[in-house]
Length: 284
Image (cartoon, rainbow, N blue to C red):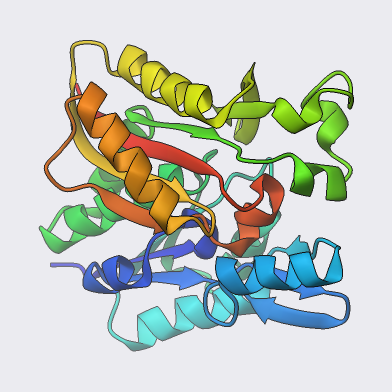
């Protein structure tokens, strides 16, 4: 039986312990505060990131991993006995990570490496990587796993509500979210994944109503189907995430186990602290 390695990046929002249990390696997105660079999750988390943002009053920038980081990840996987590699990357619409992984693949001519543009992000990507890892552990073949990834991609959904526009204002992106600044303090944008990006769905005026709308949109998407896997996403707001869990369980049929996942700095600086959302995989 061929040994197949599953690799992704830290924009998958996969908790490290869950990734480790499933033998998934995450290549880190880079977070830059001026001339100082940090590997997302490995060297800086959401809490550290927003503590520094609030202290300095300025957002960091992010960068895709260099191709050399993927070369190292691929080499380490082959050296550890893998025969084939499947690498799932955050959407190419928001990051050059996919391009870096494709470039790295060229260093291994003749080896079986599939680099996939997930056209998704956060746990939308994370659930694809988990499905791939689970299939690999059960002995699925290379092409079968690729088909499973595409099938899960069609069944995963994400909805989230921003807590504040403060960080969008800092990044100069508020104009893309609302049509005027006068009432922005009361706006709680509802986001989803569309065309490989986090995109605005609606503008809601209070946190309570925003959470209610996220749950309502999730229920509408679910329709008469059941949820296979579910997580609550948050940006430096675990207590709020637990409160949201209570709300969503009271209004939807949820799995007995719900995962809590930090969005992680490669993505969270674009949404801001306090973002709460859910990602889930439906059963056909």
